[in-house]
Length: 113
Image (cartoon, rainbow, N blue to C red):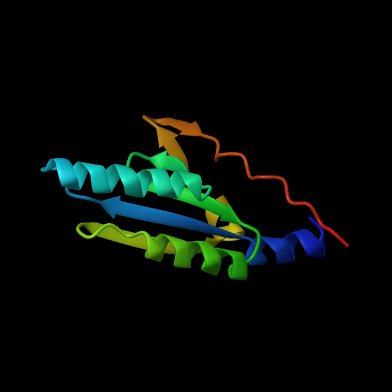
C-alpha cells in the first residue's frame, strides 16, 4: 500500500445515519418516508432498514452532507449521524447468519489536476 493510499484512508469519510422514527399516524409515516427519500436523493444508500450510509471524498464534503441531513430532520423521532474514516469503515465485519459478507463497493475516486 502506497503512502498516498494510506493517507486517503484517513481523509476519505463515510457518513452513517441511524434513525428510529414513529410510524403510528399517517403524518408520521409520511414524515418518515420523506426523510428516507431525501437521504436517498442526497446520495445515501441503505445499509440496513433504518441505517443509511454515504461515501464522502473529504471531511469538508462530509460536513456539507451532514448539514443537509440536519436541514431535513423529521419533527419527531430519533436520528443519529456518525462520521467515520474510510480506514475505520474498512474494519467493519459483516455477517449474514454465520457467513461472512464483503463490504459494499467503494465509489471510484478520481483525482483532478
